[in-house]
Length: 285
Image (cartoon, rainbow, N blue to C red; front, side):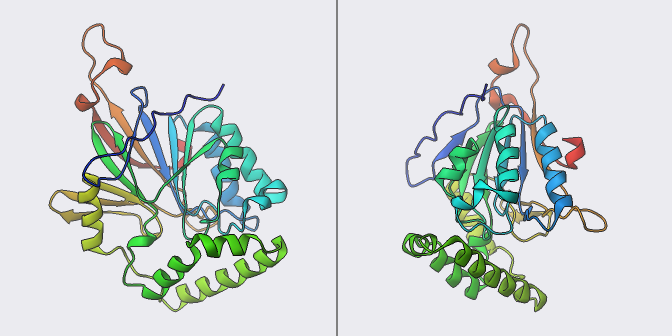
């Protein structure tokens, strides 16, 4: 039986973003991003599949670019995409799944989310867990120095552009995606795509979310950054199981609660919880 969904996000006053409230029985949350799954890289797919089958997390948050490319939900009915659907469906029967769009899979839609028993998160989203707020994002929207990419992002995130693109035949969409991916790889080789998150904009987002920590992907540069004013930016790793050494890292938040006499873990006050932040391998999950 599928796990019960968490309480609906509640709109916050004074322009603060809605908050996803973690249920009191959640003790372990995993965060991954930038797996760039594709049929031509089976090692990464196999590592992800094993992780999704065995993680003991109560919820897994996929913060963008699960897929190297996504051209529409109608591509999910066969081949490699169908294998990915089956992995998500199986995992969704025993834990809660959340998905956020990345710069490669921003066309994942409601049909795919429903098929995979997965909840689509807005970017950014605020999570309340362990008595504090955690700001979640893919991260690309804050790479402001890359003005060419920001112009491209504004175009392809426009609902009218997406409606027109999704109306094209599937083969044509795949051809366009291949061309865009080639352009992206060329930018990487020329070091034009190395912009990092803007410090001022990142701190403004954190302040608006009333959060001290931001978790994001996109840059493929895993690290913990102190931003000043008690704020921190936690960057997720990309995945490449075929690299030497392999890159397959999971960020885990877990709660260690000291229980009072006769109290169950679900009854414990989340404000008394200590949140442990770990970077672990999929095998440790």
